[in-house]
Structure formats: C-alpha cells, structure tokens
Amino acid sequence: SGSLYLRGAAAVRTSHGVPPAPAGDEVAGRRPAQPEPEKPAMRRRTWLLLALLGLGMAWGGLPRGREMGSMALIRTLGVDWEDGQYVVTASTGRRARGFPGEEAMEPLILSARRDTLSAALAAVAAGSEQEVYFGYVDQLLLGEGQSCRGVEDIFAYVARDAQLSLAARLWVIRGDTARTALEAGGDRGVESRLATLAADGERGLSIRPRRVGEMYTQLLERGCAYAPALTVGEAELTAAGYAVFAGDKLAGYLEEESARGLALLLGHPLTEVVEIALPGGRAAARITGAKTVSRFTGPEGRLRLTCRVTAELAEGNGPLSETERETVCRRLESLAEHEVTSALEQMRAWKADCAELGPRAALSD
Image 1 (cartoon, rainbow, N blue to C red):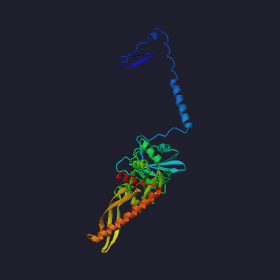
Image 2 (image 1 turned 120 degrees about the vertical axis):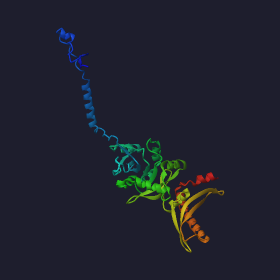
Image 3 (image 1 turned 30 degrees about the vertical axis):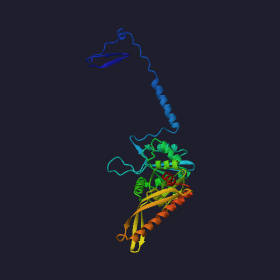
Image 4 (image 1 turned 180 degrees about the vertical axis):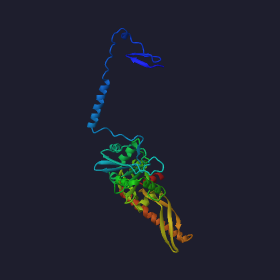
C-alpha cells in the first residue's frame, strides 16, 4: 500500500507513489487556512514538574531509590530502652549472594532510636537502600534495660503487627543491651549461635528456649513468667540461666543450681552428670527426667511438692549392688532437693510462681 499523508484533519492514501491532488483551496488559488497554534499544556506541565523538583530539593532531596529485586530479610530483632527512647537493632544474618559456590555476605545490621516502637521500626526500614522485611524474624532479643522497664508493650506490639510473629524465640540479654549482643556476632552474625543454643535447649543440654507467645500468655494469665537469659562473652553469646519476671518487669535471674531447680519443676531437667563415691570406686549417674506434683494440704492449705527424678547409670564398675543403688539414689535425691529448694526460695522472694505450682495444685484437688 502507499503512504499516508496528513493535511489538517484530512487523510488521503496514495497508490504507487503518486502525490495526492491538491485541496480545493489550492486549486482555486487561495491560501489554505492556517492551523490553530498548539495549546501550551505541555509547557505548563514542564514548568510544574520543575517546580516540584525544586521543592523536593529544598525539603532535603528526593527519596533514595532502592535496588530492584533486592530485599533485606530481617532474622533477629533487638529492643533496648535507653534515655527514654526505644532502640531497635535488626540483623539479617549472613546472606547468600545469589550464585552457587559464592561466599555468603556479612550480616546487614540496622539500628534506630525513637520515642515509640513503631517509629523506631519504621526508621530502621528507612535506613536501608534495600526493602526491609520483618516477616522472617525468628529471634527477639531484649536488653536488660528494656526488661527492667517492662515487656508487655513489646509483646502486645508483636501480637498486633502484620509481619512480626509470636512464634519468634525470646532471649533476655543479662547485664547488657540487645544491640551489643547483635554486634558481638561480627562478620558471622549471631543467628547460627542462637540456633545452636535453641537446639541444645530442646535436647536438655542448655537452658530451654521460649517463644514470645508462650511468655506473653503466661504473663497475661499468671502475672509472672520466665525466659532464657544470655550474656555477651568475648567470643560468643553464652547461656546464663533464666530471667524471672514479676508482672512484666524483670525481677532477677535463676542461675546454676537455681536454674536447674526450675528445670526440674517444669519437667524439663538440664542434662546433668552426677559423680558419686562408692565403696568399690566411683560411679556417674545422668538425670534424664523429672515430674513434679503439687498439692494443697492441711487446714492452712500449705503447698506440698513431690518431685520424682529419673536417672541412668552413665559410668560404673559393673552392676551396682543393692547398697550401692541406695547410695546413688540418696545422692540424687539430695541434689534434686537442694536445686528445687534454691529455685523456690528465690521465686518466693520475688512473688513470682513462674513454675505455676499453685495453679497446678488447684487443678489437682
């Protein structure tokens, strides 16, 4: 087909390259009417755009662009309370580069402080050139300052937020801040260490981990709760017993025999090898289980506890005689009583029945 020529509002198609016949006005020798000048709408839009650019520069510049297809997935979140403000620190952990065989990138750590928790989280997200996503947070660290101030508002925010999850594991940083704990991981991050501590706790090799939702529920229903505590060591995070909360505020810590006593009361004993001197040598027994029954007795309603501990012989010179078995049982019984009593005395002083012995006794009657 031929070309399409436009003149004013008319369109004429030609064939075989022959030019179109002149319009009527040109045939008559008259000058054709001139088209109306173009309206300056485009010019006005250009000036408006330039004005907006100028205003953006006057107000501190335009928002920074984010990398296409790039997202920072936050794995660990830390919350502190310093000088009347929330300090939120977020870590991605070590990140894959996206190509097989390449070494993972070091963690991205972001931090911001604001008067409210929501503003601090928003500032953390705004501080990265990547899009920040909190939906993968599976570890929540609370600094000691925040724990002493109160934790219920933190848990309530997590419960309301669309991205954060009550299934995240909770840790209290003893004697330090959550930000210090996150930065202590260096180029490797703290995520792998926290995962190891949680796995050890599930197997009874270390303090037992807790979920945010578990502790929040206990606080709301019982008015007290416990959480695993960590200290920031020179090389890595270290288990440091349990943090006990009376109300939503930190009351103190159960450590060593007191922490083992709480574990016995909860029915999740820490794996403990006990060495026992016997007439024919030495033996070693390993505590493997515990069950505590609580009841109210007498007219005054005194609380009576019965803690049954199971153990296995880890090492010894052959089968034990009856006398040796009694010696081992008495030693384990004495040790368990000492540990449970130590935990009970501290919880009684704090008025925090975080082992829920009272409610369990009420249900047993």
